[in-house]
Image (cartoon, one colour):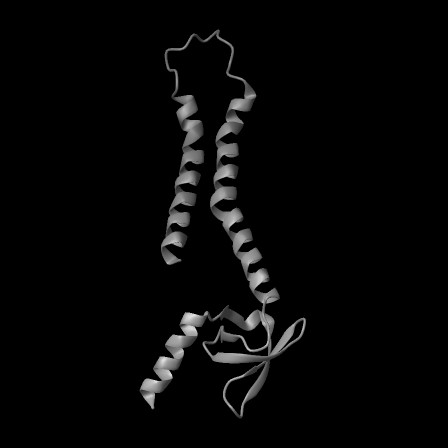
Length: 139
């Protein structure tokens, strides 16, 4: 995830530098041009900006909306008995699900009511097996 973020930041910086230097390239484009020739059309100046908008959409906005949609799907599929990891790192079992809140069981005696937005991920069956093996090795 961190590599993707670094790549995205570098791509954004490159795009900004490209847009900033586009006007310099345009001015230096034809030094021996006929002074009586008509100037290039005005829309040519907008091409670098349109390219930047496309780059930002495909590398920043689109992935964010995909992640948000995946998270909403995950939260919609949350059900009783699921093992979750909270944003604070607790591993818990879902006891009750409400529209904004869930009640989770941390151990046999401790139940906690929390916001759904505090759920980081739902553990898969393989992750649950790893947790069981870890718990058995500690005993």
